[in-house]
Image (cartoon, rainbow, N blue to C red; front, side, top):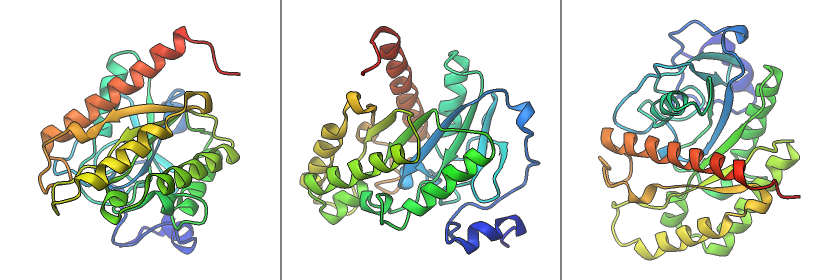
Length: 269
C-alpha cells in the first residue's frame, strides 16, 4: 500500500510503485535531533541501491532522507529513496565513518534505480527529474549535499555504451548538478562488473576507462573505490553479505582519502 504522504511524489512521476522501497516502520526523526549531518547524495544503479542479499541497520547517528515524503528516519535497509528491498553498503559505511571521526552524524539520500544507464540520469533522461525533485525536497528540509556518490556502469557495459558517449552523458550530469547549486565533490566509483551473462569483459573495460577518464579534481570530480574488485556476487552482479561489507569499507577508504587530500592541497581556483 502506498503511504498517503507519497501522493505528491507519485503524481510527479518520481515514486516508482512496486520498485522503490516504501516501508515506513519508524517514526520520523526531528531535525533538531540530527545535529548537522554530512549529507551523502547517492545516485546510479542497483549496487548503490537496495539490491544486496543482506540487510543492515546503522548503529550510529545515521539517518535516511526520504525524498518521497520529505522526512528523515533512522537508517536501516532497505533505504528509502532507492529501488529494491534488499541490503546496501551505506549503513555499514556510515557507521565506520562516524566511528573514525569523519562526521558526527550522516544523512543518506540514496536515489539509485536498478538497471539505470548514465544517460538516464543525465538531463533529458527519466531519472534526472528524480534527482532534481529529491534535491529540491532536501533543500526544503534544510539540507544540502555534502558529497555526491556515483555508483553506476554495469548497465552501460551490458548495452555497449562507448567511452565517448558515457563521458558525454556523465559530464552533462555533473554540469546539471552544478546548475542545481550542488557544489559538493562528486565521487566516481569504478563499477562495470557482472559475471552473468558472460562475454562482456571488453565492454566492461570500456566503461572502466570512461570512469577513470571522468575523474577531474579541478572540476570537483574525485575518485571513489574500484568496486569491480569485489567478488562476492550472489547472482553474478549483486553483492552478498561479505561483498556489501567490502563495498562499505572501500567507500569509507575513498572518502577518507579524499578528505586527507583536501587537508593538504589548496582548493582549485
